[in-house]
Image 1 (tube, helix red, strand yellow):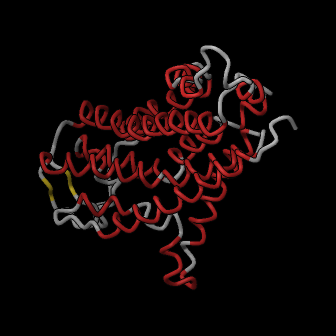
Image 2 (image 1 turned 180 degrees about the vertical axis):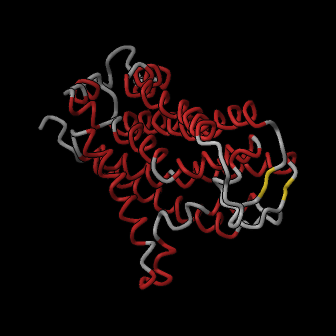
Length: 281
């Protein structure tokens, strides 16, 4: 009866622009982006206040962070990719459906009526868009802050101290950011699946972050041998290989395949669960 109502078109319900605006107006969006954009300046201040003799024996990434904007951006991405960016992605993808269920507004959205698959697709697209913005905002701000503070210089490679011209390193850094984004798809998909199955946003976000931490702990267990390579976080730092004078892509290719494989499975499960979910309970 509803499908035959004059003017009703399932494909026009819950437009993406409406969902984008709804999520933009959430306080957690402002807070999360505020933290991400402020972190490079906090790190910059820490380096300025802690200026002093630095160890050159190991040429660590932190030792080279003040040698130019690209080095500083690389350091900022390194220290944030395994936790802060994980939390940001888990927040945007884990809160999107669970918060609606928690506010009891999910049933009203479906009664609009918005088809379940369309509602989930729209929320997933918007959540991934905000996640992508979060992952790219931090290194971009770090590149700006580092360049203003330390100048635009060639990048020095940790460990060896080899120099890569800035013109060659910039596209490689962009590729590294893109890979970090792809590697975060596992976090996004897992958080989205948990968000579909619960009415607790904190549970969905915390569950995704917690499972990522467990994966990182397990990858440190050498006794697991080659099994570790199938953990979703094992290849998370493979992007560092692309910034070397002789870039290596094997780790990034393997990490991309594993990340996409996990993501497809988890998102498919999310749609399956949501189709059978009792939104009135």
